[in-house]
Length: 164
Image (cartoon, rainbow, N blue to C red; front, side):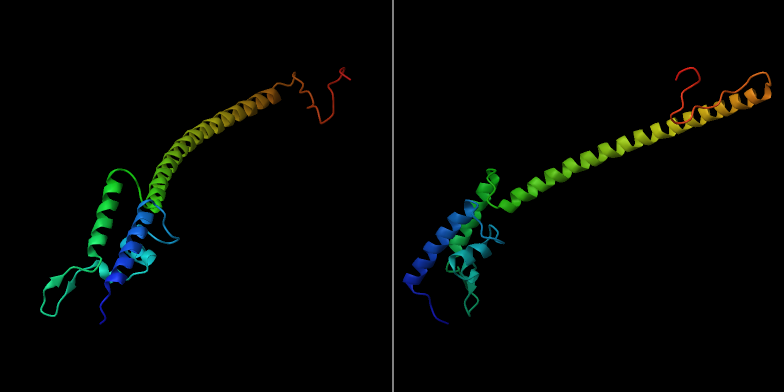
């Protein structure tokens, strides 16, 4: 396994710091997140440098860029705690949650309106049925009395007699 030169390490750290600033100000590449994977990809380094390594004897040594990973995660956490969202997807999630909440309110209001309108429809149909029954009763009563003459119903375009 080849070792990284001091010059390469310096260039990589510079690239990582530039990528860190880009991500922390919310400038994410398409499909990227504000995370270590995207940080490594933007800087052109492997993620393995962010994590501790084990020697053959079992002792642990820090990863080449572990200090930068810790700095990145610490700064990201601070920004999020301060209310500055560094990941536009987090803002989108919050916006969608608010939208879902608003839609739930609208659905509830519409359900209540439907219940009210259904009650109104039932009452209207009931009243129409009662009026129909009353009209039918009056027609039967009219038919029973021979001295009352029914007037013909006016057809379309027909005027009652004497109004023409």
